[in-house]
Image (cartoon, rainbow, N blue to C red; front, side):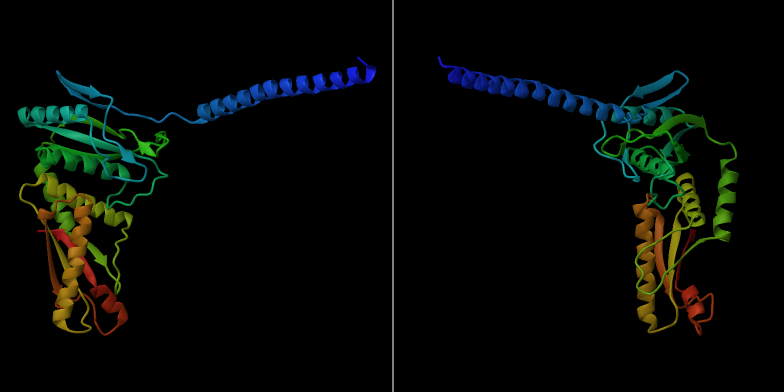
Length: 301
C-alpha cells in the first residue's frame, strides 16, 4: 500500500467516524434538550384548583370530587353532569323534604379578572343561580335555596379555561323573620323599580351595578314568595302612530323579558305588556323628554 493510499484511507475513516459521532451525540443532545424544555414547560403550568361537591348537616353528609364546572367568564353549567353529582342532588332533595326548616346555601366563586356578562352583580351569584335553577328543575323548591357570590382570587382555571367546581355548599336554618324581610324587599323594589332606557333601534341591555342588584333582588323575591311574579312594561315617546308605538313598547318589553329569562328568572313569572305612549314621565316636546319616555319598567306585582 502506497503512502498516498494510506493517507486517503485515513481521511475517509476520519470522515466516517466524525459523521457517526456527530449523528449519535448531537441526536442525544437534541433529545435531551427537547425533554428538558418540555419538562420545564410542564412544571411552569400551575395546577388548576378543584372544589368538591360537598355538604353536610348533622348526620347527613355527601362528598364527591365531581362538581358543577364553568368556563372562564361564563355562568353556564358545562354538561353533562356526572352520575355522582346527580346522586348528590337526589340527597339534597330528600333531606330538604324531610327538614322543612332547612335551606341549602349555594355560594358561587369568581375572580376579578373575569368578564361578567350576566345580569347579576357578579359571576359568583350568576353561577350559583344557574345551579339553583338546575336544582329547581330536579324538583327542589326555589324557596329552599339561597344563592350567594364570593370573590376567590386564588382560583385557577384548567388549561382549557375551565373552572372546576367553583362553588361551595352548606345547609342552614331559614330566617325566622323571612316574611318581614320579603315585605321590606317588596316595598323597596316597588318604590324604586328597575328602569331600562332604549335608544331608537337599540337591541342590547347594558346594566350598571345598581341595576344588577335590582335584578338580584327581584329574582330573590320571586324565589322566596309563592305565587309572586313581576311585570315588564314597555313605554315609548309620542312620535308616530299610537298603534305602532304600542307594538314597539311590546317588543321592548318582550326583549327585556327574554333577557331576564336568559339570566335565570323563570319566564312564567314574568308578565310583559306595553303602554306605548300613554304613560309619559316627561314632556314629549323635547328630545330629552322623549328619551326618558322610551323606557321599560320592571317591578313586582
